[in-house]
Image 1 (cartoon, rainbow over the protein chains, first blue to last red):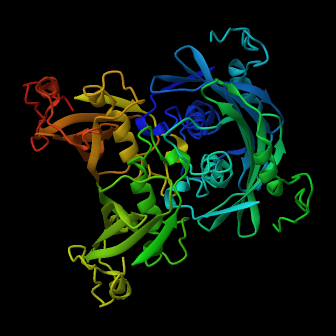
Image 2 (image 1 turned 90 degrees about the vertical axis):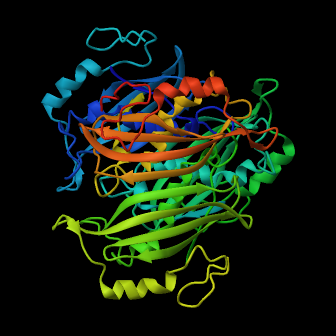
Length: 146
Length: 146
Length: 146
Length: 146
């Protein structure tokens, strides 16, 4: 699991006086940075980027306000060339939202999806978790301690 | 179907030089305004708001750039108290992304979901469509003309 | 003068139930597109960009809500290598905000500011205006008709 | 001085592969939270808000990328009912941008600006600084240590 902390700003809230729903995909993207580094260690943005987002889903669980938010990020599934990412946003020990992102490992030169290298697959394993499991036990045997 | 036009700005694009994925939920929210008006005709933001977003999904179909974008919005399904909204983002006659939003009709005073009134249900029917249907024929018999 | 229309979305408003102050620089940037085209006709984002923003100023004049907004953009001053841009955001015939942006014409290869070519200078002249003038008469003699 | 740390996300960068200029007012707003608390200790967003932004200015000093950013915030000037706030964005020990915000202490019920109470004035003094001073010595005698 990767942890990412943030503090919402005043304008992240909307007239309902809760965090606007559109902030979640933005914060989830911010929290994906350490995952990106497995594919692009220096986060070099000057050349082609090896990951494409194919799909995102966000479930809004409870309303969030002006307090510290912690994003917990996991790898849920590693396919041949795609990876399902699972994330949760917590505020004051309460789950605010959870979401999934499907990434495709992509080669811009070949213009097609490419297999995820074995060494990246191995390196990602400690971050894998089964979100169906209430204890969020990672496959590597460690509890995520949510 | 409701149509909503927008022009991406320079900063809506990211280092990949395409529209950043996080812009889609934002634009889809903007395009939902005429739908909100069925529940809150004057878009009065000073009191409780009758709709809660429970879930969003976005499928990224093709990359978009600095050109006019048109969002097409449909009602996909009307349940007892929830509504599934379906939207597409088009640029240069190409589908860039499609997404769904599940709304819950909510009463803030009772703090629970409430049934969608029959008159709203009727008023929304002309905007219904079956996205599985390649011709996107609305249930009211009119083609959406995408 | 260039005109740019937009419709704020629900989440552009903050808990004060007015447009969040941070939206103005964003909208002003969106409205600068036709000006950019004088320097980069096809808005080609794949190479170096000929303009750098050196400074922005926004004056918040009156609160804005969920209604159509029109941005009016003018060239205020053309220096040797810099241009001062002046913009206004109108809603329901009321001035909501006004702002200035100082651009520098920049050559990324030489890594320095470069003189604004005479033909661009000429082409921009019809968009020039004196914002101190209550009638906003452009220098080319046409009224902006605000 | 107040410090606020943030990590830009991928989509905060634009096609120039640097932080988009519009992010600065957003980050500066986020960093103003401890200042707001002097006027609204619990950041209660359910009632009227005691501060209005009258004007912002941002000077873009150097380009920023995907690295930790630290915002330093100071009070520059306290008038009868207005306060000038001064902020700097630092990345890798380099000044990326600096900006000012003019706040007006406002009473929504009276619909007019009101004097800043003496106790708030006193409490803000340790955060005052003279930005013209290269050492950024605060008026209370402590160096800001930039």
